[in-house]
Image 1 (cartoon, rainbow, N blue to C red):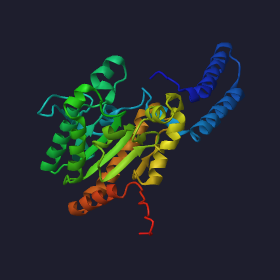
Image 2 (image 1 turned 45 degrees about the vertical axis):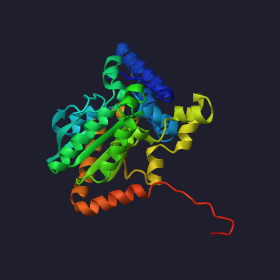
Image 3 (image 1 turned 90 degrees about the vertical axis):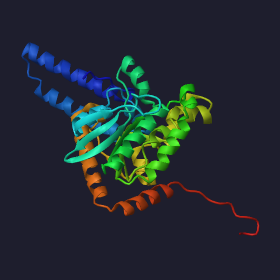
Image 4 (image 1 turned 90 degrees about the horizontal axis):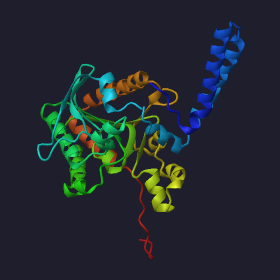
Length: 325
């Protein structure tokens, strides 16, 4: 896979380029540069560690959006077996931004609801850039109800900048479709495990994110609004997106502290796009572990815990009246 460095990664790639030139020169002229190569490799490791141990919120957003990052179908191919995609919402059509179907995680059969982006223009047009229409959410709910009927747990892989906000979506009631999913997932009588694998944008992500256990990959983000949109609203200019990203507390570690997610799944150094197989192995292990715990919990207790989990999110205060009441 060709490397496409982000701006903050360019010092690493420049050092790697110089290392390759040094090795090529050594091979071509039969000169021993072993000490220089070792020194350069050490410098690369130290530079990489320094950069990735101090990522800003905006840099993590950039990693979450990387075009080479593994998408839902990449994880399905590596973590699951016997994948069978099911199509259509039985009302309007089939939304290719929301692949859903049946699969096995280890020995456990389950239903999958996912969001899928594209890697090039043609695929992005087909997948609508990962932004689902109302029929996508209705298809997801149909598949989840199928899982409930046959007592199959639900696994949701979230990766969307947000639900599609166009005229067609509004005409077919996107807000209602998401709202119904929130209501129905809250009382679905099977275990639900959700993981944010890239972007977790607004209601588009939450529409398949009501779960007993909510996981997030280390460099993914989950937010009520994108940094660019937040910047445009607060500063009237999108150039303040890095500041907005910090203020939104949208990174995995911030979300863990706030209690929005239950577990942060580690990624390979430099992001999941650097090693798809290792990223999938980490995700698969986390999904199996959390699904096992959910399956061991009686369903009535699981529903109570699911309800309490989302009811306690957020903080609010009521102003006191003049008499102190």
